[in-house]
Length: 114
Image (cartoon, rainbow, N blue to C red; front, side, top):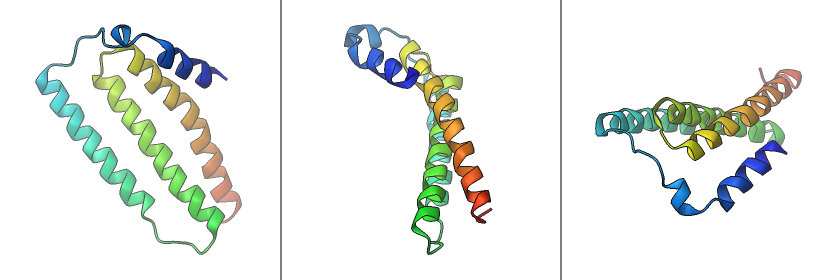
């Protein structure tokens, strides 16, 4: 429920208010861009895992990799971003998807995939 409220707040906030932030210096932005690229590469490699032959397991394996990537991207934002709205969204993503990653990991263990 908190996720929905946060997303609604962001969507309903006037664009001028969301743009009211100081961009990171060029060097900081370059570091963040490199970090995003590394996260993306790692996430897509994990999402491209060979099929297990079990549709449910393949879904959970791919989605867990996707969620881990989302959390890592959000962590990059928290380390380098300055806009309060994007920082709040990043924290919301971390909070929600960390719980979902734990659920998926438990499911994979329970079903013998880990």
